[in-house]
Length: 151
Image (cartoon, rainbow, N blue to C red; front, side):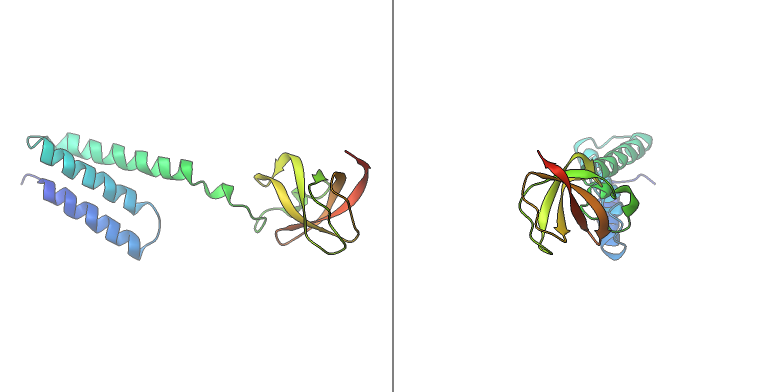
């Protein structure tokens, strides 16, 4: 039995429908790879089976790799699930004034958990431009204290 273009099309659509049932963000790329092979089969009718399989695998793996390169899970801006001990003691520069128990923002020279700017709170009023130190992490907000020295 020869595999026709519509077999690849049906496989592609089936894999994309399966992605709706099992949200893994992987099956959709194999489905798109199958649709690409269907397009190749329409354009080149006498294309061999082994090259079809190789195009499907190569395109699917390339699409999956591109997906994870562009949308890396590690770039989500949250501290949840991360070790807060890594943040304690880090020194940064206060971006805007923060009043007692009011939110502000602190910028770090070296990114902390993938971002160089984080929301913060303090037990005292601190002016923008002051150097601050992280004393604890409360959820995804850093609690800071003034270290002295205006930058």
